[in-house]
Picture (cartoon, rainbow, N blue to C red):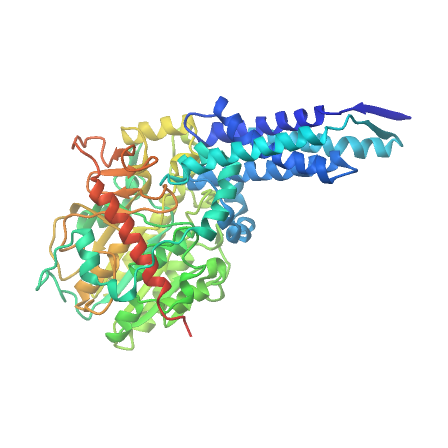
Length: 617
C-alpha cells in the first residue's frame, strides 16, 4: 500500500514556514522588540540558500536533507535561547569550547528552559517518526515531485545572497553584538562572526607602549608618591574568600523578620563594606573571577580566561606575595580539571592547590563537598600552614550556592513566605542562607584561633546569581517587592566586597565604585608590596575615589560601569543607554564618550599585553 505525497515546490514553502516559526520564537525571547516583518527579510534568505543547494545537488532523498537542515537550524535556535537566558548575549561558535561543561552542570542548564521552548522540536520529531511508522507498517512513501527549474533556483539563490549581504554589510560596524544579530538576522550574524574573526585584525599595541602611566591615565588614576595605608598590614596573612553567586542585595535583606545572611551582615557592619562593587567575569564565570582577582587583567572577549590566557606566564598576586615571603595556596572542592583550573593555577603561580582529591565528596552539595566541609578542612590546613611562621595567602572558593540552588532539605532552615517557596528566587535565598551559616562557622574559627587578627580577609561574590535574562514576570515582580525598585543590570552585577584589614580604620560603608580587578592593587598596598614593575588594570580602592569598569560577555562590547551608571552602547556610543546604579540616582549626563572610548582602549591594551607575554614553560 503506497502513500502518495505531492510536495513539489511546496517543500520549499513548508520548511520555510517551519523555520520562520522557530526563528520568531528565538527573536521573541532574545530581542526586546521581538519578531517583525524585517525578521523575515533577514532570516528567510539564509534558509533559501541552504534549500537551493539541496535542490541543486541532491538527486534523491531530498526530504531527508531538508529534515536534517531543519534539525540543524532548530538546534542552533534552541542553543541561542538557552545561552541568552543565562549570559544575555547571542551564542557564537566560540562557545563550542564550553560544550563539555554543559553535561557537568546539567541541572543548572535545564532549569533555564521554559517548557514551550521544546515546541521547536515538534515538527522534527514528526518528520522522523512518520517515515519510521510507515516503514513499520510496510508502507512506502512515494513522492510526486514537481522539480523547481534551474533558472528559478539560480535566481532565488542570487537574490538570497544579495539579501544576506545587505543584512550583514551595513551593520558590521555596530559595537553591540546583540544589535548586530538583530539587524543582520541570527543566522547571518553566526556566519559573520566566523569571517569577522578571520579578517578582523584588532590593532596590537606593542609591549613597549603598554605602560602603567598609560593605563592609569586612561583610567583617570591619580598616583600618590606616598599612598595611604601602604604596608599598614605588612606581614599579615591574606585570606580571600570567593562566594558563589553572591549578590550585594542580600546583605541586610530581611524576610519576615529573618536575616538572610546574618554573618555577612555583621562582617559588613564591623569592617569595610564596598557597596558599589561589581563582578567582571566572562564566559568562564567562577574561574574568570579567580583570574581577574589574581591578575588584575580583563577577561578575553570571546572565551574563558582558562582557554588561551593560561598558556602565558601571567603576572599575579600569588607570585607577588611569594616573592615577599608568603606561602600560597588555593582551595576548591571541585575537580581541578573543571574549567581547566590546573592550567590556571599553574599560570597564576599557586604553590599548592587543594581540590576534590583533598576534600572528598562527602556531604555532597551542588558539584562537590559542601561549604561546611570546605571551610572545616581549609581551616585545619591553614592552621598547619601558619605553624611555619611564614605569612600565607589563601584563596577559598565556595560552591554550595551554585545555580540552580538545590540545597538538601535537611540544610534548609530559613522559613520563606509561600509565594517564594519552590521558586528560583526562593531557592537562591535559601542556598545563600546556608552558605552564610557555613561561612560564619569558619569566621568564628579564625577569630578563636587568632588568625583573624593576624590576617587581611576579603570576601566578595564571584558573579551574578539571578541574571535579569532568566527571570519571568512573576520573578521580576518578586524581586521588585524585595528590593523596593525594579531589578536591573546594576543590581545583577553588584556584588559585595567586605574587607577586614587590621591595620586600617575606615568608614564601614564605602560608596566608591570598584570591581574584582581592583583587589590585587588594594591587597598589594596593604601588604606593602610594590607594583612598580607589574602591569595591572585595577586600582587601589583605598586611595582612589573614581572608577570606570569595562564589561565583557554578559553585556555587549563597549559596556561600562561608571560611578553613576551602567552604560550599554547601541550601534555606537551615541544611541547607548544609561542604567543608573541606584534608583535614587538622579545624576545627569550618564557615561561620557571619553570614558567609553578609554574603556575600549583599556581592553585592547590588556588583550595585547597578554598576547605578547612569554609562553608558559
